Length: 127
Image (tube, rainbow, N blue to C red; front, top):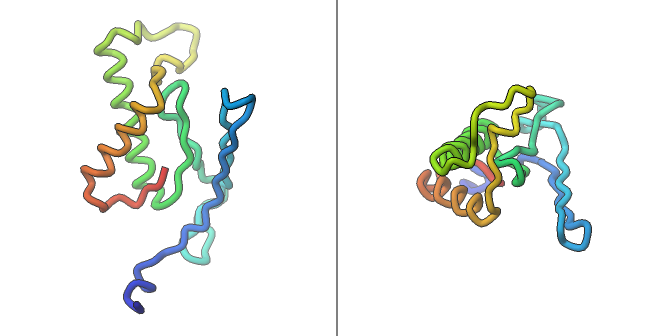
């Protein structure tokens, strides 16, 4: 029991999600503080991540693992969108909407599960 207590590390992240507009929208909020034990490592840490143009998630855990996982998921859907022709040429208006094609929540969840399963439990990311 003592060895389990030594391996456990509290992240202290606050993440909230609420269903809004009669179930047609979700509001996600998170704190911005990143800690390492009792030390504040970063006061402006981004914990809400865009996975596609219509799917966002909040993450808790090891920031490097979360960033790497989000990057892989995001570019996986970017590549799929380009292969299917869902994304055209880069727009000249300066918007970055072309980077993240729309995706279904089910497809994003499946992709996250596949990535985490492939890591065999070695990823400290909770989305």
